[in-house]
Image (cartoon, rainbow, N blue to C red):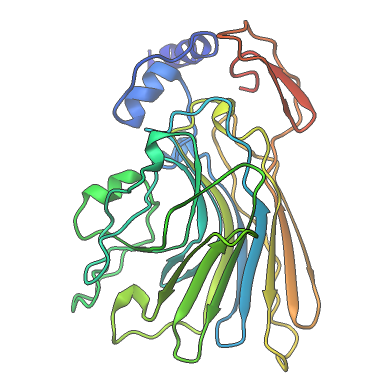
Length: 331
């Protein structure tokens, strides 16, 4: 019976605007049909690229540049989330990023670095913010317990679970669509990581992290994983995504004298499985003796556009050469 009810509800969602709020994905999905989320494996909406590992040490530089995406035509910041970033995966996640909506963006600081509420809160308005973060879960700072947990997604729910979510967070700074942002990572001679996200006019959010998990007896690994993501939660239609996604350029620079052969190719590591996610994304890499450059484009498949009844004068909007009319024109 459920197999009959769900498609009917999805069809109704395409022509009836969503009203009210729901607590939890199951409630929203039952009322709104399919959504793009990170907390239900059958409806993932994330798109990520990476798969390369490179050496980590003084003299290496890991950087990216991209423009802040345009705002989604429909977005409910109190329960939807978009993160847009280039990150390093080590023991924990270094992630200077753009945040839109209800996402993790603050911590209590030392000694526990517990995830906490934000001020200002991105959940109160449709506004991009940039922020540098080092995020980890399941391992308390300077704890003698040696348990390890998989890196969890940064949904708001982790803030409510004591001892599982930790973050070192820089200032939360508003940015606007079209602004160029750059992210930079370096590690110095004392084995302290420095991570920042900045704009050309001098705005910058930065952090420094001397130990993995902020445990003084730990040492950083000698290599790091590279990746980019548009990480999302609770996007209820194509119009909850940006109309298009600016390309991300990642440049890794090795110190002089580094032997060739350290460069590794990238690929798409996570494709969205929800019906309206950007499942036609591309990666292109090039290299020289001391640099590796990768260009990532998050894209949607080209397909015919259904013309649905106009609701609340949503107008027309352009998505990679496709004019959409009405709500949820791309299912």
